[in-house]
Length: 383
Image (tube, rainbow, N blue to C red; front, side, top):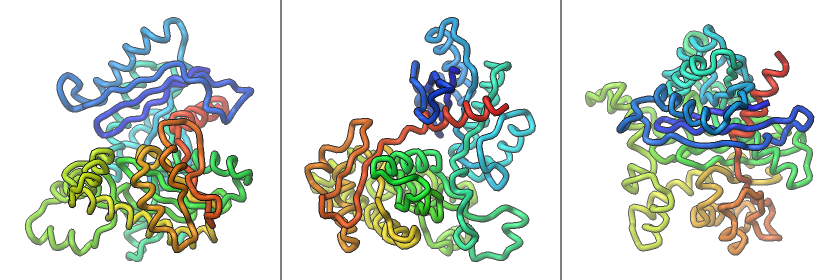
């Protein structure tokens, strides 16, 4: 089966075509085509509908007579209704559209892609795979906010968690590397990219995670604030800020960008090494918050058997990893400087901790496209 995976970001659309063998599940299949449309919303690519049309044109040339068997869409927020991959129809699309306000940077582009892909390949099954699904196992004492219960019952205000596709994928790889069955794996997994989160996994199940009702809560990110005193928002509302202005402030103009002036981690680490005080402050803030979450989640998962780092920053930024691991020495974690410098730019999972580290630290490259392809194929075959 040929599966097209569509991963829509706020200003990008990545795609991957994979051939999956029903007799060899769990491998993510063989990738036979990939590409990306960048800078959506600028120049000639007005929106994700236009971007999808460009993808369809590229695939018509690269696939030739080969036919797609399914299309899998990464959808960031599944709300309370969607706890696993689902076959898309008109009613499901409308239900997803209602969730747009919960993930304003990601869900609206995904819905546009779903509608456009349904027009481009009307006879091909379309499947939505959710970032929130892995966190369906969160216990109530974790997902409840200390707010009146009516807000949850009327508006679904609770913690959902995100990056679940990536977290489960790298967690299973880490468990295999350690020789531990996934059902027995306890650890802390940090997905570190422009969006960043940490998750406590106990017995192969999510028991706590840093992102909440939306992907805004938790760690300091590229342009998102992460945790902030809610009283600040009340104060700014009283100063005349509108809801849209607050949304832009917290989602697009905060995080590394607010402190260092931009959100390019490589440029920030280079600037910090050259003595830029704002860049160094941004790194220190981000590392401090991540180390604090890892320490807390070491407790939440009952004692981590591993700390796993993934995502663009987690996989590739040796200076940031070193800064974070240095803060975790009270847990008995010790980095191997040579291994840490060597990790990156490879698809291989590897350890970056010293042999005498109390807890192994692994860098495990993620492959959300492979995980989405597998989930999509499973839904279609079950049908």
